[in-house]
Length: 238
Ligand SMILES: *Cc1c(COP(=O)(O)O)cnc(C)c1O
Image (cartoon, rainbow, N blue to C red; front, side):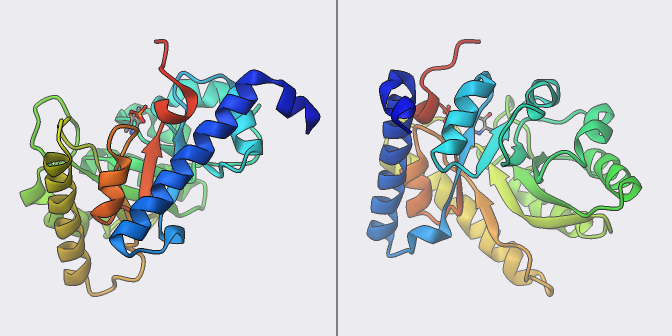
């Protein structure tokens, strides 16, 4: 442990994680929510195995990676952790990832779902997934349109080796708290609507939204999982 204290990078990482956790907690207090309703997922794209492991040693239990290749290169050297795929998935990569992550959050088409389902079946597992919704309807972002979300979720529930746990979104970049909250609020409402319509609603419990610049607003609007990268690991060098 003394080693950790003497390593300035580990100390900074520790402070960053503590600060993010504190802000999540404060947002929960403001929203009248319990802080254990919100999971902190550390986004580790471009981050080295050493630093990811330092974060895990500091209490991070879930990580998010964007690219299949990058994740598979790091995977064997990671301390025990739940890994989530959060970046756009190409159908031809589904077989490589389905049995190697705890969850795929970026399911944005039935083709991808079908590929994940066959891969999961082959390995005899049930894979947790989230439906990605493009809440701002942006050209540049993946995800189904909000008006298609209910039908999409219903279709996803038909895959026997997939377990639809909820929804994920990346809203447009907004510069005011008001605008940020408006998108999150819309997403939250959509999530609640779809969950309520679902007869067997027991497993839809995750609303993944909020990143470094807006996770507090996301928590205020009902997020149950925030995906935080640069506020923990610093600015990324691509
Ligand atoms: C990179 C990324 C994040 C984290 O972004 P930060 O702004 O660094 O917190 C979250 N979600 C997705 C899908 C990402 O690609």
